[in-house]
Length: 185
Image (cartoon, rainbow, N blue to C red; front, side, top):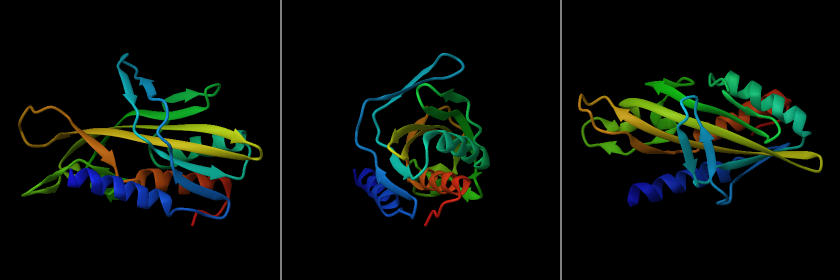
């Protein structure tokens, strides 16, 4: 229970403190489940909240910026639903590091007493989904990250569900802001 509270606190802290001229970021309210179907027909559902960043730009510009930001972060979008205003990367397989940082920077998968954070000791499969909404002259981007890990323990144990630390969402927000040419502080 302590780990869950800590992970939630980190997500709220990371997302609640990240505002900028031209952008604002807040935790997303609990809304309807996000449903994704991968290339093999498997269905992924989540009611987990993500983060919302707002940009002072029209939706078409933000759509292009989100696509470019996903690419810049080495997670080419494989889910594109323009009418539904949804961009995502389904089944992103990550080992050891991502964007130059250890995986525990982005994911909370529990800890091992000997080897430390589980996120650094296995293969993570992540799903990243961003949904765009236009409101007047600004556009909000709600991003949700779900993940699980298979540990490098030599056993055939099942996957462990991981939480997001909020760092991946924050780096994505900054990458979108960069693509739009606005401050991301």
